[in-house]
Image (cartoon, rainbow, N blue to C red; front, side, top):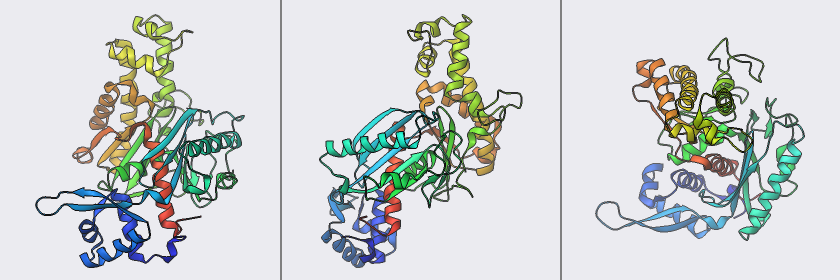
Length: 403
């Protein structure tokens, strides 16, 4: 098959349903799409004959014959997923069903003007080609490319729009740059939106209104509203890191004061711990300091798990401030779930407990009656999985299977 245009509408609906459910039986598809069993069977048979759908084993539902499960065929090709953060980048090769075939992560710093888009994307492109070769694949095997970046994105042009953290990236054509090596379509979105869309697929779209909040070098939020990503008027929805939590707080890189990002993200936690250690307030922090006396998030977490009062106080403060910010968002948006991710989740359970306590104390009772605050189930792979979901979803919507 060269193009989705030769598929009937019913066939495309089946493919989209299989993608979002990961796998389904013929009867489940018929019920989900409100089709007769005979019509669903006819559509599935045509898709199997074309190599677009594969049978992947039997599952027993109650009594009777086991049901044959179906999913999009992995023989179609592969997806490339690129997750670019403020200080790190991950590149992966995935199947159309989001299984990770190859993955590489390394440090980058998009805040450094010398590591502009050409340098970072050239490295991503090299890594992608290397990972493809490692799996015995070629650039022509790539169905689509999904890329997440830490800034607001114009989805139509696949370009960043005035990114505050990324000098030189504004209006740079990521799509054109990647086309030098790949003929596959390129889709770009904000890094928190791709995490949210990854979580949406992980949940089989069973949750319609939720937030994915990343607390790392910065603080950002992906918003799912009525089962769809909400991007706002200019693509900057979810920039919660610059909500003020203290009018007398420190100045943020955005120019304002008291932003939660400046007071509770990873750099703030590490800075407060460093200051406390240098004052001699914590022997535990001193023990876990690096060779040059520097503290990172892992050291603060290790001291906390030993019961260090100073480390615990710093972690609780961060969680409390993040929860204070989220309480306002919860009151406004009324989500059913808040999923936390980012490097700070590795610091230990005290952070999550502090976030929960602050949200429940500061939010309206009706907003929190059925609210779940927990870590994302995708963990470190949330960005990569989300970039893959973006690529496959947009590929399905675009009407073309092959570039």
